[in-house]
Length: 373
Image (tube, rainbow, N blue to C red; front, side, top):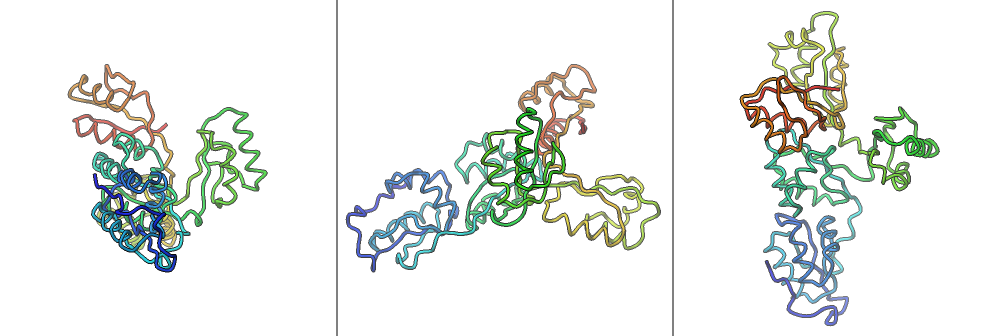
């Protein structure tokens, strides 16, 4: 652990404002947020203040100190992996005005361990908590962070996941409600109606395309309701299904399948004959509309299905060793004990969790199928 205690005490020896310096964190860089504790201890400030500074970089960590002290601290922070500068206090950056939320999506289920290790190293969280975050839709990894922190997380995660970031002040939100007591549901729906929020349903997706300002007071009143989810549309994911055609594909429709969903040209007729058929999975909301518009231009009927909060079951068709199968299921906290095949597991899983378990079972030689309820 680095000793970052400065060589002089401050602010007792604070220089005049005209020649004072600040230590500015430009980015967390390749350092870990776990280092925040060491930084806080050395500077005699709270770890929470240090973490907030790191998350919202560029930001001032220490202000109004001598130039040599600032340079010493900046050098020590740089040796820990942070991007830090000693700057005249008058030239230090203003408080970051635009903040972002960040979600991670695990496209390749086989890379869960790698992704969790990378995220745990970046945040200092236990790996078990990192896995839980990745398996819990919509995979909200960081909130209220600066663009520099978004980039640092992207660098840390590499290609192990898809990263989506969105400004907290832009875009629209969807509101989801799972099963909850009738009195709790009525209170929420009444409050949404009173706030002028148009309701679609009374469960599932209950409101769509709502701005943050309208939803903030609703969230403050109902955030203890675990059945309520308010999610930025950018964090939603969709599967795309090709619907049955009345006639053979035209050349333009074939090209659309090639261009938008990477189906080889020679397979387009075969795919069309199998409709309805999934032609692309887990599309980010921001990528969806151009694809839908591309198919609409050639009169190709497709359906986008929201999968972010989809629950999937699994049916075991065959396996080489029942005892090994049950041990593997137990390691995923499944309470099903398989005694005969085929067997449908008692549990339903969020889409990402189901894919990870499916991949693990297949790797163990188990023939398994998804089941939708």
